[in-house]
Length: 168
Image 1 (tube, one colour):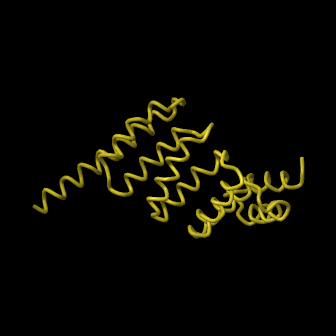
Image 2 (cartoon, one colour; image 1 turned 60 degrees about the vertical axis):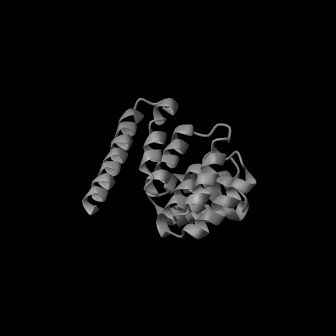
């Protein structure tokens, strides 16, 4: 195992439970290879999830993908960051591209698309996409998640409809 692998494993093992050790190991990993895709992704996650520094995190995710377009583990975190930063057009483009990446978890990416529409209050589209989730589900544990997602969107759609009727 190379030094970068050792530090990367330590960083992954410590994140998010021991942030100080995770960050130290991550900095060592990046000092060995500043273009390591996994290290860049984890650093982007660290910035987005812990410090809410979405713009800075986006730079790390972009660099990770530039180094390896097939880095299937980067896309979900990058999309999450774009959604949290309300960069909806950019998130939509990345979702479309992610579908073309061989080996990507399509269930996870479709769920990101559902969130994209839901965050934009486009509930009809969110519901339509959510109903596609079972087609890409290969894990029996996700059945409840899918049902809850569809129910959540239906509830929001009904609430918005009710509010609109009340305003009239």
